[in-house]
Image (cartoon, rainbow over all chains, first blue to last red):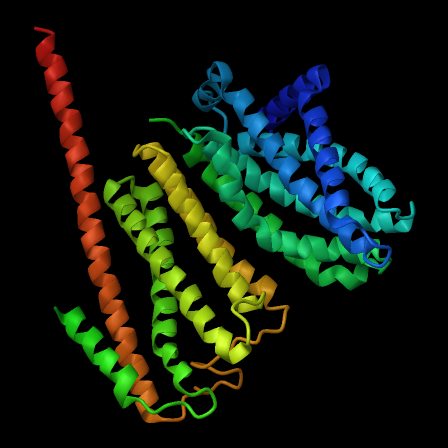
Length: 223
Length: 225
């Protein structure tokens, strides 16, 4: 637990001092949403659907950037090697990296939700609060997946090119469920209407976090 | 050789012997290729995951070679499933592709192992990359049941023939069952043969790289004198 807290504190302190990840994440998700506003040309009838779509596209692509950056920072100056040499449980290391990624993405998403409300002419109100479960579950799952896979892709020649190729297919089912749940929330349905989809998101989160914690050791080990 | 005979017998069965299905006509005969391809693809991806687990556990290169060989062959057959399914869907469903649950699942499976092969192609042959491959293989295989679960929520237009939703098998004519079984055996034999070929080739390559490394070490040692 000490190791987990120490690494998480290091990542958060680094972020508070530089602000790099959150600012880059925010800029990227802002631009993705702007592109989608013009690409979708939202009509009043499907506003909720389009807004949910834009939000999830922003989540996935900005999240990828965040995970890559976090791993590149560890690989610089052989920091990752030092971490693997130290007597830290790889699961704790994975948990800390995951928690940091999740925190940055969550902060950016709060801003993204405000922007999406403005861009797609939605109402500020209860709908946005009901959006929280699907977004947070989706973010947790994506951060879990991207943290593991970024550790892989950052160590290959292809680099960050490989991350989307590995991450997106694994994440598609969660996207299906997440978009449906978010759309239901933005359309003003109560949370109960999306229980089924939220259940799937929970299943994916459990799967991704467990597998990530178990397999991270094999990914970071060097020969 | 056995594989060749089985393939010829199953071709005869599919094109000559088996009666034409009443509703769909001649097109339905693609069934005897479509189903065995799907079976082989699933079996191959299963082997990838199991080989991956053994590799992480025992750290023996032999398991990585097996997993890599199975992934490549599985990808070929998964592509064939999508193509034969698409050819079949056009006349019967009236469309090449639809985002039906079964189709989506298979497509995601195809993307997953496409990612696995891209990883292997883009990275060097090191034990580390082999471990990456094993991790992705395990992840992909465990993702599949959840994918199936998640898309089950949609209604599907894909028929469940072998075990229907009421629990019986949907092939009326005994000759259809026999043809399907022959076809399945033939495709399984073909899979086994391809897997052995590729596996042996990868084994040779691994051995060669070990020899190269040893030679380089000896030369380096000799150079010191």
